Every structure is written in structure tokens, then in C-alpha cells.
Amino acid sequence: MKYSRILGTGSYLPEKVLHNTDMEKLVDTSDEWIRERTGIEQRHIAADDETTLDLAEKAARNAIDAAGINSNDIDLIVIATTTPDCVFPSVASMLQARLGITNESPAFDIQAVCAGFAYALGVADNFIRGGSASVVLVIGAETFSRILNWKDRNTCVLFGDGAGAVVLGEDDKPGIHSTHLHADGRYKDLLHVPNGVSRGYDVMQQQEAFVQMRGNEVFRMAVTKLREVVEEALKANQMDKSDIDWLVPHQANIRIIQATARKLNMSMDRVVLTVQNHGNTSAASIPLALDTAVRDGRIQRGEKLLLEGFGGGFTWGAALVTY
Ligand code: UT7
Image: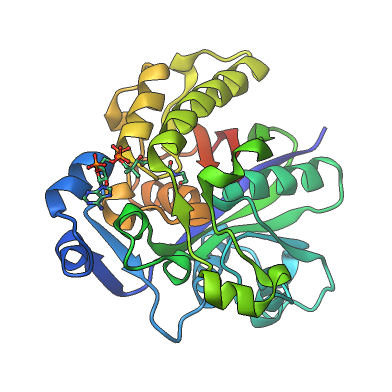
């Protein structure tokens, strides 16, 4: 039986930081409102000449160093992103060239917005279990700031840019115990960028291709579906809540994270929280949180992690992992 295991993690955040007080100058909001409703204190924003590929490359190089592998050992790259540099080729394909990988292994992007990293991890895990890959670079990378309407206080205060990466390797024991992925397309209008290239560039320019969200309705659904999916992950592995050492959640809102922690009977000191520093970095948020807690020594080898995320689509997912 083949399993995948995390060999190393990495991340990257752009240098520019916008604090809540900076947001007060852009829209009718306050530091107090943002902290109380979301837990966010600041977010990183990509420089004008910095793209998702640049962020992904830096996170990837960190993860490759941490894993102690050569780039050419990588036989699959999966990047979760909603904000790719080009319509095509994929960010993953361009990253393969930047990393000097010449082994002609597959590379592709997947798009599941804030659940993207859970999806990418699930795909990568199945490639390894099925014997189609043995060393996989899995990345969540976003320049979400580019698809925000900076005049809309309902959305622009919530998001940030960044990238997180893991290198997965084949092993005879887990590693990744299971991944659980879901989608329900009936809710598309609650959280979306309603226009894309297929509608034509004129439509995109006239109608603005920016994030629109009915936050309160998304919030309620996120709490419900994340509760269900963490339960599903525990049940699939015949594990109890008390078996989990760390919750590594998608970082959209501290109140959603607290609700999931309560469901797991976990105190907040067993929850990796980065939302205060990063905001919601969409597909990048879980691997950014994971790398933060690995590098500061909180997450140790052998510990059990529950990763979960929820996003537009709706899409949601979880992974149960022994680090
Ligand atoms: O990662 C993908 C999934 N996304 C999420 O999970 C996000 C889920 N939703 C949320 O995190 C929360 O719903 C928000 C943080 C977006 C909003 O918090 P809320 O407690 O649900 O507030 P609300 O939408 O019910 O709005 C309350 C009030 C409204 O004013 P009125 O209508 O009560 O007068 C808003 O207009 O807060 C107002 N408001 C703001 N006020 C100051 C909305 N945005 C802001 C703002 N500053 N930035």
C-alpha cells in the first residue's frame, strides 16, 4: 500500500503590508470593525510587478529546501490558484520551467478558490496512492488583491496575497490518511467573480470582474459544512476528536475558525491562526498556516493535523494528516 507524506513545507508573503488603519483611508471602515468581525489586523499585498508565479516560486523553493530534494525529483506539480498569471499556460507549467525541471512530468493548476489547497492535496495524494507520481509539489498561491474592488468595504478588507507549498513523497505509511472534497454549485451567486474571459474582455471591463460576496450567508454555510467535513474525516479514519493535535484551518474569519474548534473540543492554543497577519489568502491560507507552525516549532513530526477549507462554488474539503 502506498501513501503520501509531507517531506517539507514553505511559504512566501509579499513585502508590502496594509494594516487596518490603511484600509480606513480607502473605504468607510474601522480597525475595530475589522478586528471584531474577522480577526484580521493586516494583510500582505503583491507589488505591482509581482505575480502569482513569483509568489509560488518563492514558496516552492522554501519547501524544496525543507524537503531536502532536488527539483528534478519532482514528478508532478499541482497549483491551486484563482488568480493565475495567464489564461494559459498554467502557473504550474511555468513554475516547472523556472525551477529548471526537465523531466517532462505533468504540471497543472486547479481552481477551487479557498478550498483549492484541500483539493490540490487530494489530487496529489491520489496520484501518489495510484502510483502515478512519487514526489509532488503542491502549492496554494494567490494574488487575490488583483480581483478585489478596492471601493467595496464588504470584500476589500478581507483578503490578502501569498503562497504556501508542500512537497509530498511516497511512503509505506500515512502521511495523508484521507482527503474529503465537496462542492455544491447551487450557491454560486453568494461568493463569486461573476465575469471571466469566456464572456469576452469587453464584458469584463464594463461589468467589473471583482469578488462579490454575501458575507453573512457564506459565513453560515461555511460553519455548517466545515463542521460536517471534519466529522467526516474523523469517522473515515475511526479517530476521535481528542486524537487531533492541531487544527490548520483556512483563514477566512476567526469566528468561523472558533466554531470549528468548538466542534472538535479543541482549545484555541491547538489551532494555527494566521488570519490576523495574512487576512484571507484563499488557496494559499492553509499551506501558509501550516508552514508558519512548522517553522516556529509548534507542529512536530508524528503529530496529527486536521486541515480544512471552504470557499466559492461552494467548494469545501478537509485532510487528516500525520505530519
Ligand atoms: O474564504 C471564503 C469564504 N469566505 C468566508 O468564509 C467569509 C464569510 N463571511 C464573513 O467572514 C463575514 O460574514 C463578514 C466578515 C464578511 C461580515 O461579517 P458579518 O458579521 O457577517 O457582518 P454583516 O455582513 O452582517 O454586516 C454587518 C454590517 C452591515 O451594515 P448594516 O447593514 O448592518 O448597517 C455592513 O454593511 O457591517 C457592515 N460592513 C462593514 N462595516 C465596516 C460590512 N463591511 C464592513 C466594513 N467596515 N469593512
